[in-house]
Amino acid sequence: MTNKEKSAKKLRETIDLFRCPICQSPIKVFDLKSLICPNNHTFDIAKQGYINMMTRPTNSLYDKKLFEARQQIITGSNLYTLLHDRVSKIIKEHLDSTNDSIVILDAGCGEGSHLQKVTETVGNVATTRMGLDVSKEGVIMAAKNYKDTIWLVGDLANTPIGDGSCQVILNIFSPANYMEFKRVLAPNGLVVKVVPRANYLKELREVFIPETSNGMYSNDETVSLFKKHFHSVSHYQLCYSKTLNQEDLIHLAEMSPLAWNAKKEQIDAFIHQDATEITVDLDILVGSYDAEGGRA
Ligand SMILES: C[S@@+](CC[C@H](N)C(=O)[O-])C[C@H]1O[C@@H](n2cnc3c(N)ncnc32)[C@H](O)[C@@H]1O
Ligand SMILES: [Zn+2]
Image 1 (cartoon, rainbow, N blue to C red):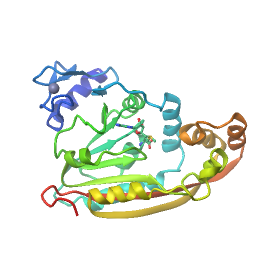
Image 2: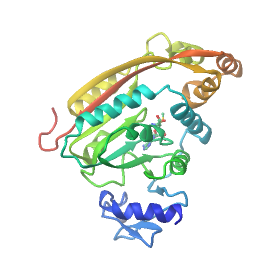
Image 3: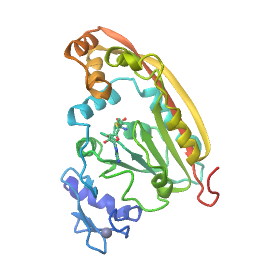
Image 4: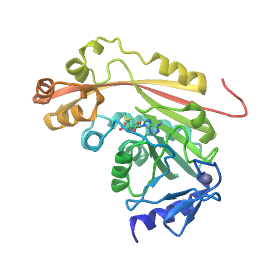
């Protein structure tokens, strides 16, 4: 069976989770090749198994090289292992024993490795994983590497997902759209948003944008907007450092917009260190929303 057919079969089993991003009607799988709505809006399943459900042209700043570097760091170093463990634990603690199957959407999934890592240890519940990103490059890479997940090119501000479909929405280092997140969240569902704090990758900032390395960066607005939108918000801070070897440092410099405007000498100086401690300093914001109860 081809990737496309496998993907079409998986989509047939989960088709009730989807809606047309153009007219919001329910969608069906057609001929194991595409998704189609009653108004004939059609979205083809690509040969890699992902579906392009974008409704507007986009111009992503993130390219293949950046996503490859992110993947190397996320899967090949232990820089984010503690983050993955913590997010998995948060999800497990939230799911009660009545949840025998859950849907997890990663909104702004990039190349998909965070979703994969977080869900590897979520536990025994049957998990439908969906990753959505505006970047086709990222989603193609995700679809090639992680075949058990539904991968969508799409806009998190207009997701092709039906109301109340997701028990968990992950939103890691990505923009958010809280109206849309609340629409697709199942009753008592959970949004887990990960945002950098002032010292996140400070060793990279010190070299590439020293003006932001003095603790002046603040995520206060992001945190307070999240708290306005969700009920019973838990706010965790996660701060640790890990030693990265030279190969990892090269990937780190390539994976981050922090180094985009750097000079060659700055990049050389950074990657020619033998090994160095890198700081991960994050807020993990966890909120739920009960449409009946309105806002907290
Ligand atoms: C810093 S990257 C983080 C990607 C991934 N979560 C990670 O940590 O590797 C931000 C991501 O948000 C995506 N993004 C930006 N705007 C988006 C939108 N409107 N809808 C979906 N994805 C979006 C970008 O394409 C990019 O992959
Ligand atoms: Zn339609």
